[in-house]
Image (cartoon, rainbow, N blue to C red):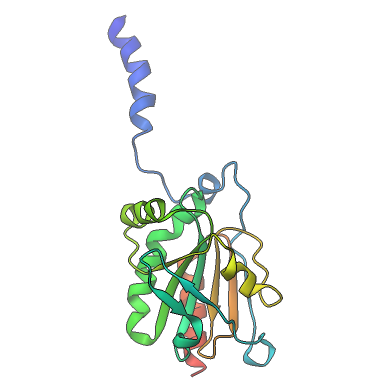
Length: 187
């Protein structure tokens, strides 16, 4: 009887140690996020270039104006966000795949201190920098140009720094790669 009771208690506890699947239903459980839908704007329908100078968690100052000529991916995230955890490894892989093609990835985190953000990056293997946006400057920079209705939100800026696309919620690998390919093809 005792071994059966131990098994009844141990199985659920051990199951809790298994890695979480990247199931959107799990990622969004008890959390309101975007649905992964995206909006893109053709070159003639884009807002003006986004102006932003901010500081990364490593203390480096980054200006979007200095990145003109690159396609820039801004991923708005924070460490306790379940869908942000789901997409982190895919975003890192995409950032590496496109790094030599003139694509720069920047995280934008409006909630976490440096230690929390670094712990997230260490856990998920994220190597591109993140902006410490607790002053909401990166959110304000998008005001009037790109609505940021959910976390995570991923914004792709063209080589002129203008918003080319936005993904609300988890950035699907194929969708983001397609957006990057289209934006790069514009020249």
